[in-house]
Length: 237
Image (cartoon, rainbow, N blue to C red; front, side, top):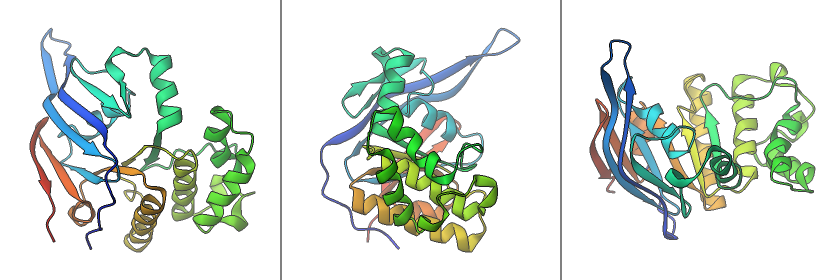
């Protein structure tokens, strides 16, 4: 089911001529991404779709400032990532970006509550514990705050990851195959929760997925093949 688009609030992400080339052992080079250009408005939900090896995860890393391109630029929430050093990019990520990963990426030595608190504490929120409890309650895990990741099911771990991602009130949420390690029913519940939290928070959502049903739930999709963008298709009712 396609989602109603929120009122856009300007451009949150602008990608211009983005490329990534890596050196090969034989002295040659491999172009992983070439000439990627698109914009994402505030409140949009956008899917990045493509087969394995098409460059989806590399693109996500560049958009989030986790890696640097060899060509082009990424402007995220008013910040040109190409002119920032790693420390500055890390600050932008901490203040403006939320992440949800296929493998959950929870810290095993921290409880669910502490995992949600961590990014809040990193940006200096004194009310980190209160906010973390609120978000755990919002994802239905208020009774599980003292449990460690090993004591939680996969679906519960991903709910903690969602609470952690939304707690910092990000301008944009990047989700990399968020249901990849979940069974079909649990994955469907997680997707419904992601979209519900996204609507409530006014966040911009960018999903990397190979799941066409999930892509069709977004406002539009960006399709990659061999490191090139084939289309940025708007989904029509």
